[in-house]
Length: 259
Ligand code: ATP
Ligand code: BTN
Image 1 (cartoon, protein in one colour):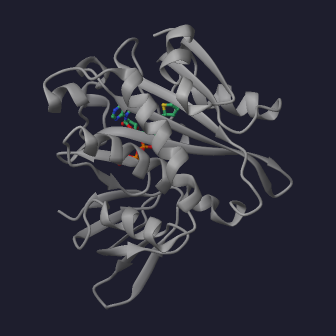
Image 2 (image 1 turned 120 degrees about the vertical axis):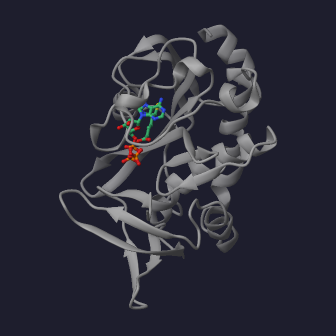
């Protein structure tokens, strides 16, 4: 992977600019910084290795060299997109899931931000924003995908089982091809974020749909119920044992199948 190779692999996408790093702390940090300095819509940061890759709530995300995909795409939301920004995680999740599906795989979205293959985490998404007062000026879509076996961290530091595309496919797919397809899907799906068909496509790919789950909410708090879908803002909808509907908002929440 290098700047020139990336530029030619992604040429047909008409991105505004690409910043490639052999090694960087976090592509999301670079993208947030670049956005604050005026990066245009569809500017892209890619790294071969991250030394401080982040998941939600600053949990570490491992991206060893040559084994994974780590990228962050900057969007400048239009006026029409601003009310839909809570759906961005769905946009990224569906885009990545669709790529895996074209490889013949059966991905599911572990709400809110992970992609599972055979019940194991193969990719994670981190959406962040730059703000002016209370308005988002830019959205950063950060995506990490485990490509080769070496990208999968050892089990003792994982809170949830992980896998890679190589584990499942039996070969290492071309990172540039996967990156191109994921970006093309994000770009193609973006105009449909406000539609009901977008929400039903997202809902259809939810892991644990119709199953009893437990949502751990920071500290000791948790709720449990059956997954029955998504609210229009992308919150997870559960029905508890008393029949009450609970909307779980994005935040400090972790989803687990009820044991
Ligand atoms: P969980 O994954 O336990 O449900 P979570 O969804 O809250 O928790 P995230 O914030 O989505 O976790 O992801 C960060 C976690 O992912 C880290 O705490 C680490 O356990 C795990 N992780 C880090 N790097 C990778 C990787 N390359 N592949 C899979 N999992 C990873
Ligand atoms: C998660 O599962 O919590 C999300 C992981 C997101 C990882 C990607 S890798 C590219 C981008 N840069 C980061 O530091 N994080 C995201």
